[in-house]
Length: 107
Length: 114
Image 1 (tube, one colour):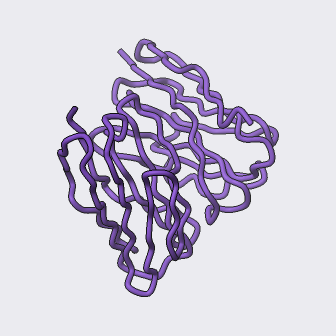
Image 2 (cartoon, rainbow over the protein chains, first blue to last red; image 1 turned 90 degrees about the vertical axis):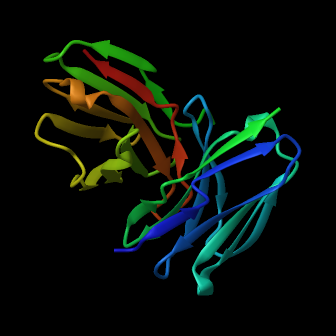
């Protein structure tokens, strides 16, 4: 089945720093979504991005489907950005999840 | 819209008791998913409904688990009898259309079985 790999597994940054999170997938996908799970456990859908680039405030995402990867950019990090970032892709009808990147933003 | 609504937020019960988790999907969404999250296993899909019909229940751990979706606005996940290893966060999620659409999660139910 399709494999989804996220890197880095952990990232610790100072407030104000920028970061890039990566999601690689092993086969063609119909869609790709990025989620943020905050320290309280809530899962928030950040982007639905099967291809191209989208921006939402300080966050942006780019998916290059032909090269089987997606990037999530976080600029000017804030402590509220802390949590785990997951990417998930659809294979057949199932959503396949990466293991996540745990991001800690220090004040 | 109020988003996906789950209840209760927290449930503490004793081994052997029946547990019922509830979910109201976003209005107009016709796909509903139940997930379980643990530190050891991460996010696991338990069951997926489309138009109130169970499409894939291969993730349901065993016969102690059952899920129903009697109408488009309500679903339940029942565990009977519950066991300590069922302790986890249970999420409900919904999407418009199929699994190929943007997925929205509820706040989850933290289940502790003592």
